[in-house]
Amino acid sequence: MIKIEVLKSSRGNPMIYFSGFFYTQLQITEERCIFRHADRDCRMEVLLKEVSEHSHVPDPDRLHVIRLKNEIKHRGASSDEGASTILFDVLRTTPLTATPGLPTNDALLQIIRRERSPMKFDHHGC
Image (cartoon, rainbow, N blue to C red; front, side, top):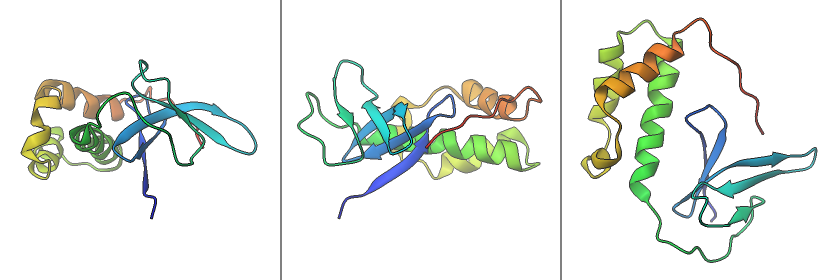
């Protein structure tokens, strides 16, 4: 069974996680969405179908970092919890293997503050 997880990039654009690799939205047409490998050195594109061989190994810990950022953004925008409460609650569920790839706590708190900013722009995707 093919499993594709839909996420959001740091700018709120659609991103998918498939077979251990990340893809960011490249193009949208009426019929399809085309995603490009997030590692720009790997010239891989996918039309939500089985992809060919990659030129590097997968980075499964990056999935946890992106999930964490998505969760703190969502909770920052939709709840009245304190920023520190949100951050440390979400950090508790993040595997220790992902911690080397995490931004600093200050940077993560800034993400929450930006989500609560009145100047937030709406992003559209697939």
